[in-house]
Image: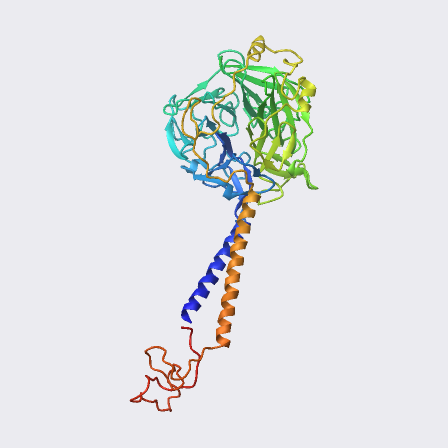
Length: 573
């Protein structure tokens, strides 16, 4: 009987464990919101860290974490709600200086990543005593083996590690990254220049502080955006929006700087180290800061579309949730009628600012994080705590300007009809509008934008190839291909249900069997030899009965006896 009892308890405990596991599957931890993070796509992964987060299981408001996270972009991803942590990889940050500032301080000490094909370098947005105390060094994350290292940088102490909310861009093919503006650099005309970081040789990366030798001195920009384009001999940077910080403005009584109109597009020619200012026309976006931008190139490289989303209106105290595109080389702004924006599906119409944009394969603008707020003036922040209505990631298909409920890595880019209607051509390219309608502000710009650099054809996965000529044997992924978050969860739940059903069946069988044994005990016939133990009068084993009854001794003849007692049931042999 004891053996069967132990089996019964074991099965029950196992059933409880499976039930607990099922609950964990259905209610796994998820990220609800992200604000002021640094982000970048390297290889086939979207990396993000620092900033502030909310989760669905801790009841906390926006707070820092001490992890670098990444999201694999190999498979489809459901982005209609919070992101399940089981979809993310992570690594501990090597220094508290990288965790980011505290919300709700505007900007949250937002920094960036410099990056190339294999490595991330955390730059700016540092907090604490190490913010600007580590000279000539940056924390680097190697994506081939997922390890951190403090890398020495040649070029001197120019880090501006505690700077934040400047503009930045990287070119993975050349290993060059750029940063200018922010709260420290180009502040009231001081430190006016551009940090140029080169990591094409990961053993000896270097940087320099570039000041213009000709033309204008640069954008003096705060809370704007900057993107890299494959134009000119070595590429160009476009910087726009945000505040101009070269001198005190007149737009606000209680704010130092004016907002910059979107007709002003600053162009940095990397080859000549020269800044230019080009005028743009068209549907100029409303003045804004804290928006994000990403680039998509036409299949034939005849045009480049710079898509922007969201932002903050300091004058009216509101956030935007709209989409505009700047087509290059036409320098023409186009208002986009996007559809299915998940933030606008309900009765509310909130805006989103302090967000990040990263582009996958030209055709999907991955919008991560942002402060989601409602109203004008006295705004209400909707995601300071976990709010599952507004997803932490949004994906905009830049071929159709439709917001998708899932990320699909297989989609290809084509120039949208909204753009070709203005610049000419068709979905495969062939743009006919190849210059600004007001003309080039500099003859140099006409020459620069008549040249296009070739595309980077190296592998998108650093674990497969570190260089264009690499012959490294591909590493097989251990992920389940093609399964969405819901599909994976569905399979796991179904498997758990099957296991629980089997266990319940075993428990029912066991209980019925035990009940049958108790109902129909086995009675051993008298004088039937069973095994060498003493037997009672009725051939049934007994313990001592009433202590007043004198126990019997074993008689000299016959079988072996135990003390007599009333008949009792025996266990199964």
